[in-house]
Image 1 (cartoon, one colour):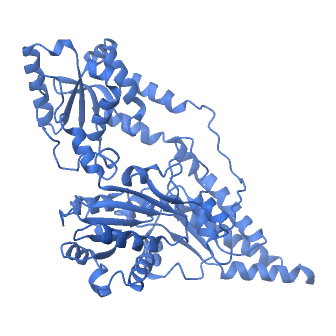
Image 2: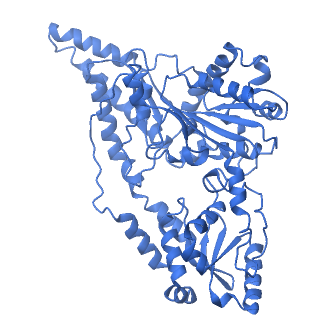
Image 3: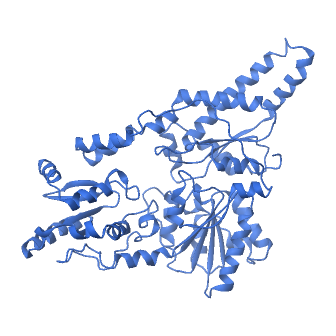
Length: 529
């Protein structure tokens, strides 16, 4: 540890510059450490998530004996399962942008792909992999940009059209145009995360004659059936992403190496960043992916673009309002407010952690324990106030129709359901107690309000994910009864007036209010709006 501190104090200008570019998760959100020790060796920079070591080579590395020492050190690190990349100091200082691009090739995305989907597939070695050469280029450094460019073709882009604008028909038009314009034995895998959407999309494809095979031969009924369909020759396959489930700790098998498979994901923002999505990409390593979503890439939605590519078509909420297809959205700021006084808190914390010289495990534990924004937003007394305000607001507004509560994550949505349910019945009892003392003029309004309270239904609607029962239980939420109802009922057509759903967004980077366009789009497309 003393040796690591000494190296930090004597860092070269190239090392200092690279550290300023890597620190505080500035490169694609990945955490780097400097002067990290492995056995008897100290790496210049290390990313635990990517198992990546970056070495800066100055003039001291040019002599032949030093090169052999570097080879031995790198061989040791590679034996530990690490990937080693080397850059000369001159390249760091004078070819910075290309150097960072090359590092990005080796950083996994949330789906196990390269940086933002551009890099290497999981388990595939880079071109020219191996030990560093005397010239100072890193293991796999030559050809890395070529590999990234090759895999870029698997990201076809994001098709963002606001809710109710006919995205499922746009999927039909897209696939049919591919078949008309590009020769090949194309297969289209259409993936969503809800049974009713899967049913709707299949019926739209079948209704216009795009798919002519029987439903039982193209709609996956279960996980094993999906595996069978993906190994057969079908023009279209329809499935829920949940059918890519595996037992905890088990890898999903590769089903097809075909490069003429296009995966069309519906509402991609909801379910494309967890284990199920990783399983799907492992199953189809050479497939191309395109996202169809009604949610804009606002704060917290940038990952949709990272995984699928840039926008290729946009029909946003404002355009829908201008076309009179959707009524305008009005925002009312309500309680309780949160305010972060120290605007430089993240930088201050990063500096304290750096100076403390914590181990990787200690640092990760500290970050978990002091994720302040999440704990503040989901603090129990705050959720109690929000739930009580929701009930008062919903029951007291002039228009009586559907409503939707959007929470920071699934656990918060389940907890909010319990709290809203509690205050709902409390308010109902308060109204009922007034019947014995009210005037005849007041009775009509009271009875009408009580009737609404009694007949209103509430339900949790969240996308399904692998190991969700255990994961949510750790946060004090029981998803089991809610998941049973979601699987049993057709929630889109039932008489539900209050939905508790999830719109995941990042809290820690001065993000927007959790009342998002997604809320407006789902609410305002309903006929009674």
